[in-house]
Every structure is written in C-alpha cells, then in structure tokens.
Image (cartoon, rainbow, N blue to C red):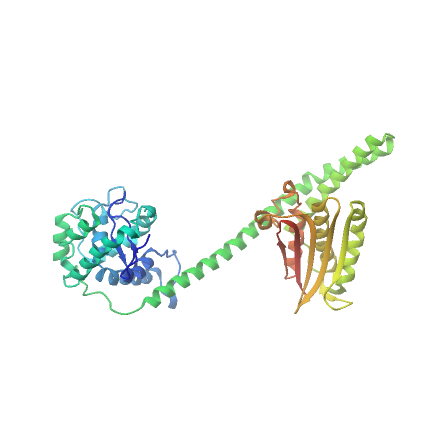
Length: 444
C-alpha cells in the first residue's frame, strides 16, 4: 500500500530486480517517471510538428529535473544500472555489468529509465511492496535522509549512499569505481532546466492518447474493410460452387414430391426444399454484405411500409402464437422519409423474422416508430430470450451465429446493419435478461 506521507507518493521498484530493498518515490518525481515510461510510437509527432527525437529530449529533461531533486531516485537508478547483466533486453553496452562503463552523470541515469524503466516497472511484484503500517517508520528515516541530502552536492550522492540502502534493509550494490566516476564526472544539476513545464508533459500524454484513438478507429475500419473483402470473395465462391448444386437438389426434391403419395416422405422432401432455400438466402445475404446494390432514394410512407412487412409475417406469427403490434409514436399519421423503400423494408423484415425465431412460440413483438429531430427510429422489441454482451458485440459479424444460444444472429442482422450504414444510419441492439430491443436509426 502507498505511504501516508505527503512527501512520498509511492514506491520505486525493488533495488534488486528479483525483489528486495524498497526505496520511496518522491511526489515531485512522478511526472518525470510517467513521462519516461510513456510510449512514443515510431513516426508520431508532437505539438508543432516536432519529431520523436525532440520528444525524447523533452522527456530526458523532465527526468533530469526529477533526478536532481530526488536522491532516492538517483541511488535506486544507479543500483539498478550496476546490476544490469549481459542478458539485458537492449544492445546498449553502456548498461552491461562491469566497471568499464560506470555511471558518470544524471544523463546516464536518465538514459537507463528511457531504456529500461518500463521493464523494471512491469516486472515488479507490487503486492510485495511494504505495507503502509510498517512503512511509516521507514519513511521517517527516508525523510530525514532526504532533508540531509539537500545540503549534499549531487556529485557526492552515490559516494554517501550507504544510509539509503541501510534504511531499505539491503546492501549497497554500487561499485566504488562508479561512485568515484560520478563524483568526478558530470554528476551535477548545472544543465538541468528549471522551467516549470509539467503542463507540456500532460499535453504530450493527452495528444498521445488522441493518436491512439485515431489509430484505433483506422484499425477498426481496416478490419471491417478486410471482412467485407473476404466476404466478397467467399460469397462469389459460394455462389458459383454451391448455388448450382443447391438448385439441382431443390428441383429434384420438388419433382420427387409430386411422384410420391406418402405424407412422411413428402414432408421430408419439403424440408429439403426449405433448407436449400435457406442456404440460397444465406448466400444472398453474404453477397449483399460484400457488394450491396446502389441505394435508390425516393419518398415513401414509412409506417405503411412497416405495416406491409408485418402483414407478410403475420401468417407465420399467428401460427406460432406470436402477436405483432405496430405503434406510431411520431405524431404523424403519414410519416414520409427519403430512402430506399425496398432496403428499409428488408431491414425491418430481418428484425421481425429474427424476433419470431427468437421467441419460438407464444410471445409478443412490438414495433415502435418515432422521430427525433431529423432522424427516424424504428424499435423492434420482443419477448424472446435475452442476449449476452458477447452476442451483442458480435451480432453484426457475418462470421458469427448466435443460434446455439437461442437467438439467430449473423447474416440477417448483418444485412440489416449494412442497409442502415448505406443510409447513413445505424442498428443497435439492447441486451436484457429477457427479450431484446433492436433499434434502427435512419436519417429522415
């Protein structure tokens, strides 16, 4: 748990990379550490068109400022540098074990954070960090050391670092040669900028997050495009390789049905015809998703079109004991919209058929039509089984089916979603423990 003192905001990773020896993280050093651990993508730019090189210089400056005021951070970094072995993830030989490349400056310490800080943080078992109840006494020791080191020149911090390791309960791993090199080298804060620019660090993080959002959107669009391309190739392959055999099977089954008199055999042949028709419809849906026809816009009465769709589905619904109600909440007896009437009718038909399949027998479907500003909403609610979050997430995926879970998803909803997109609208599913609401939103 984090310490309760105001001076320290938490813990640094353990001094020994396999665990053991904890030093405190000063609150004033948090910005420098966060900036050092931030990911800068290759090719990304910072405000003003500056490159990653400029961004790295700024991150280094922020780190140097943190190091110049935090002796515990300096001591910790030097200790971890001295333990860097030949199996380091980087090829930078300046951080390998040995006295051939000792730490000579704060800049060397900053470089370690830029190269290895993320690894050190990721590999730490933070559950092993000291508890605050026992840490308060230790932090009192660290605070006294920090007060004393304010009058100690930075170049002597490593040479006088033993008390820090004693307070952490571990031995000092920094070689004497490194202490000497740091004292005689550039271990001062003379080149550290005193400008107050933490706001620039926050700005870089915000802009970096914005870049991730943009890349995520581009990636999602690329995935959707690749899916459509794959569906296009698959649909054309299925059309050529499967449609013809299906047509032959359907024709033969219908011919045989006229030649036999036994009801059981006729019923079996009818099922064959029905299933081949269903397979044809699935291929047609995939073809539509991959390569839809051009939208033909014209004005039509939306409510009248929905009532026509419902009328065509009523025979099946009544046989299964399912009631379908249409409610016009728009306030307009004649609700005109400019869209492709056939496509909109298909989309509503898909939603109604999906609800009928989900309910099975004895249930209710309610279709509500409403207007919000310049958009029309068609909500189809049913009393079928509920949907899980996974089903909702994948419902418009042409390569997914939810029929094993009791609700037919996949190509039908995929077609309706495609129609909505072609009109500049969207199809949304609202999951529930019982029932589902599919809302088709379209520009009027």
